[in-house]
Length: 131
Image (cartoon, rainbow, N blue to C red; front, side, top):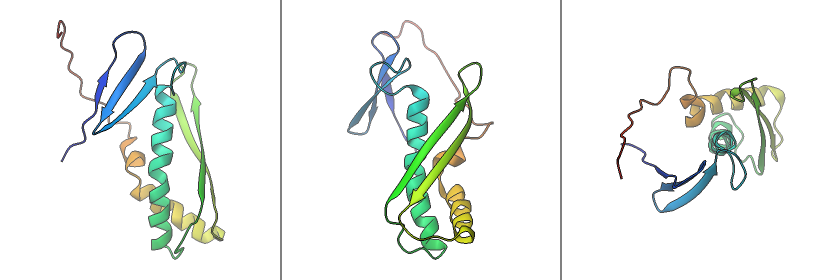
């Protein structure tokens, strides 16, 4: 199985992404849409929500209720992502020991968390004069 996304940019630094029957826009400059790193952070946080819910169920928290994640991506001097942190708030009453176990399990379940490995870089081919 594979996931496929088609990204098209007619000009400038903004691109439209076709994902199945959906369309999203990402603007590298962040002027007309979220920028690339904001989009990555949004995907990471969005992936972490179900990981927290399932991790919670597997660690004795039947219903997390409302989950709110404030994601911060710290940038280095080259404006590249250096670190990511989540400040997670949930509606359910969760003690510190259980919270640690839920987060540990969520880290194991989150697919974006898994994909952010230093050895995972896109294999790239470039075709000139393609249109």
